[in-house]
Length: 203
Length: 101
Image 1: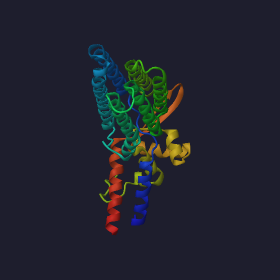
Image 2 (image 1 turned 120 degrees about the horizontal axis):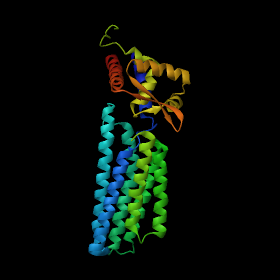
Image 3 (image 1 turned 180 degrees about the horizontal axis):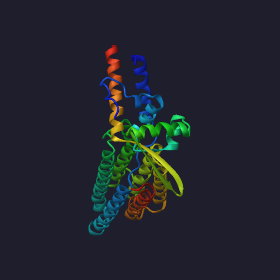
Image 4 (image 1 turned 90 degrees about the vertical axis):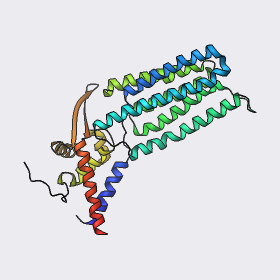
């Protein structure tokens, strides 16, 4: 084979490997684990709310939900990696870089807006409601999932749409029950998604 | 048992254009169903089946037939052996380019 042909073949291979067809779905089991973690977070929230009252509880509960996010993310990463290893798939790929870039923006926006709202609520110069934070998280998480739907089966997009809708409803009508909203969505939606994926795709 | 391939010989199983395209398409994902591969590469049913079967005989892909809501569903995934063979093929292409410079 000559160098021109080799170069052309490498170009074709790179284009095909980078084309965003479909990445593996978040496994059903990891979604169920994420849902259970969220429900545990809800229980912890409730406890701190009752014990310390709203002003102190908000500070603690933001840390609780950061912990819930970290545990859920770890479960997804570990289970996905275990599954990939059985197929000899590499730990990192261009598709994963693209996925990270896709969800990076809504994630950073959500974190930034959370800090801005909480800062204002604790005595900043403007009026803000900490009870908006769950709706913010739902909306940005929903947007991230919707974007991720580009590379994933349709169930991911549906989950994203559910979170966006829930975020709008919670923001408009249910701010007075922020923790219940978080538990119902991050807990309940993930459990339902996980069960559906397990049944349809075998886990 | 066939002859052992010389270390600098390109893998004829992957070297064929359609099979190379199938392998490269599968390399970045866990698995794809037949219709997805067909749509991505513009292949006919017969063409894809023939080449996928050849790759499966070589141990480079695994074809799984199942039913989803009573409809037959065929998925194809690259195996660890197939991934290794593709990476080795890519290395050989790079070596050809390097030699030419």
